[in-house]
Image 1 (cartoon, rainbow, N blue to C red):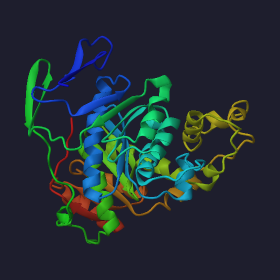
Image 2: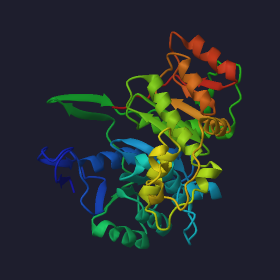
Image 3: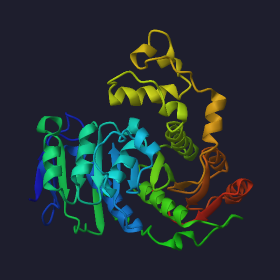
Image 4: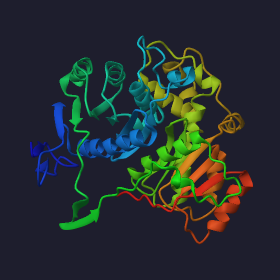
Length: 393
C-alpha cells in the first residue's frame, strides 16, 4: 500500500487528508480502526522513541504520546508493590511481562497527561499488555507485532473502533526528510544522532564526576525521550522511566519547572497517605486520578470541602500540608535530568535540586556555563556536557 486516506487532518475542516509514500510501500498496516492524522503523527514519533530506547538499553520499551510529545516513556523493569498501586495494576490476576511493565510505567507516570494517549511498544504486544491497555482510555497502539490473543482483545476495545497499527521494524526512512509550511517545502537531514554510547559522559566539568551505571542508563532514556519531544524540553528520569516531561515551552526554566512539578506529583502519589486514601466503592479510574491530582495540590479544598468529599471518599481525609509535602519530596533522590539544549542560568539547577536531581546531561556551551557548574557543585550534582542539541519541531 502506497497511501492511506484519512478522515481529515489536524482539524475536521482540513480536508482532504492522507499519508503516502513517494517511493515504495508504507511500512505500516492498520489492523483495526481508522487512525487519523494526529494518531499517525503520534504513532510514528513514538515508535522511533521506543525503538531507540530498546537499542540503548537492551530492554523492551513503551511510550505514551499526546499531541506529538511523550507523556511517558519507560523500559520494562519490574514494578514494586507501590508502583503497581499508583499505576492501578495491583489488582490484575495475571503476570506482567517485561513489555507490560514498560507500558504500565509509561502510562502511569503522568496519568493526567496520558488520558486518551497513543501507545508505542518496542516489542510484540502480548496478552498481558493488551489487557492493561483495554482498561485505559486510549486512542490506539503501534507495535512491530501482536499475538493473536492480544489482537482480539484490542479489536474488542472501544466498540471495535480502537486503532491498532503494525509497523515493519526493519523499515529505514530516507536520510533526507521534508515537510511543508505555508506552501514552502523545508528539507533537512534526519536526526540520526546516536545516544546509546557512554561517550556521552566523557566531558564532566563538575567536581562530582561519578555517574553510576543506572544514572547513565536513565540519562540516555531522558535524552532519547527529548529527541522526540517538542522543544524546548526537559525530562526527569528515575529507575528506567520518565517521571516528568516539560515540553514545548519558550523558556528553559519553565521547562524545568513544569517537568519538576510533574516529577513531584509522581513522587507525592507514593506518599503513604495518598496510597491509603479511603475511596468510595467502584470509583471510576479517571475520577480517582483527577481527585488525587487535586488532593496533593494547593487546591485540595476543591475535593475536601463538605458536600464534595462524599463523592470520592468514605471518610474525609486530612490534607497534606505544605510542610508535609516538602518533607516527602526531599526524600526523592537519585533523579536524572536531561535537557534538549544548554541551561543558560543556574536557576534551572536550583529547581532541579528541589526534585531530587543528582545527575544531569545537557549540551553545554552557554556563556554562563560557569554559573551552572558552580550551582551543580553547591549540591554535589554530577553533570555531563554532551555537546549535542536535541531540538524537535
